[in-house]
Amino acid sequence: MDKYVIDRGEPLRGTAFISGSKNAASCPLMCAILLAETPTVLENVPDLRDIRSMKLVLEHLNARVEHGNNRLVIDPTDFDTDWVPYEMMSQMRASMYAFGPMIARQRRAAVSKPGGCNIGSRPIDLHLKGFRALGVEMVERAGYVHARHNGMVGSEMSLLGANGPSVGATCNVLMAAALAQGRTIIHGAAREPEVQELARFLNAMGARISGIGSATLTIDGVESLHGTTWRVMPDRIEAATFAVAALITDGDLLLRGVDPGDMGATLTELLRWGAEITVMQEDQALRVRRMPGQTPEPLDLVTGPFPELATDVQPLFAALLGITPGLSRIEDRIYQDRFLYLAELNRLGGQFAQVGNAATIRGVRGYDGAAIMASDLRAGAALTLAALAARGQSTVRRIYHVERGYEQFERKLAALGARIRREAEAEATPRPPAPWEDARESAMGLAAVADEVAPA
Ligand code: EPU
Image (cartoon, rainbow, N blue to C red):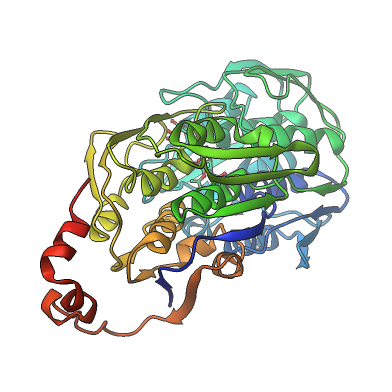
């Protein structure tokens, strides 16, 4: 296993090229292709572990997949398999997105029930509710969910859950309803840009979906769908990650290949923090740096369904607020347990605590390098950014989480001036020097160092 070794470097500068969206490409779009009777070409596909995992799922279902140069050609002609085993689901929980297409095209389907993960419990009740509303019989047995029907019929339903709308359930029901008989109306639909992308993609394949971008989607079922050629939308979470990278290192970055229209809540909060953001909509670009002469402000944030602040950017904001003077708070209303990484930020000298479904943050003057460990994808990215701003050297372990969703993360950061490299994980790390053995500290005197790391 590899780790990142990160030394504090210069502020990041230059142009960051943002990849195609993982959460659009790796699940809804790749799975929706199974609904068609002819091949589809996807362009601007990021080269990620999640894309390779989903390729294996599609191959298991007997689709043919060619992948290279940020392009996927998927031929679903021989798609005939109707189940996803435990081993695949446990590797790639987004395999759940294949359930809708399997139900629609095979009439019989079974998936291993996905369990929880490091960001909390991940129920699937809304997926099942939506399929049942289309007339599909659903039975749970021995860790699997089995489905069967003799023709799905459109109906009116609400997919609103206790935590709001569900991206996954909306996508799954949208895909199945595209091939159901008659009209389906989904109330309480998720409005995330990736759901909108799926709806537009399905329409390009011959589906009839209206209300895209609203909480009510209307789907008029069609007999069949055909393949198409499609360019995947920009990754709004990767763009947010590089925006925070610019601010946390006091740098100045131009982000290219972004859609600022999808990033409203993130940009609003970064502006409140004290960022200067120049939007170049027609060039699909954003320039991000600290507002000259302005002291960054602590924030009180709440995540929610789109267009509210995305849960996926929550750890990135935490890393930034950890070194912003004052008291901040972030409440996560989507995933209540997405805070495992706080203990790692505390290892860098941060002052974070979890209280219920919120993080409280007392900003310190700076992080200190240490060995830390990623617990999930966005947490891994946030820890990497914190390490870029930390004094001294840090190592970030379990970077396979990061590689699930960031294309060439360390190379992109290094190209902007970050001192980050990848190394094989050593068996043991060397004993750290005590404060009185550290050459820098002997030169400055211990009292000066103690003052430097004192909380703001
Ligand atoms: N929920 C239910 N019942 C369901 C489904 C969801 O109660 O049947 C709840 C969830 O527990 C959660 C909320 O609804 O509280 C939202 O879950 P949702 O279904 O919207 O999430 P998802 O489809 O499982 C996708 C992304 C996540 C992202 C969320 C929210 C993919 C593969 N995953 O997950 O991305 O955080 O939407 O925007 O697209 C990530 O990129 O690291 C990631 C976790």
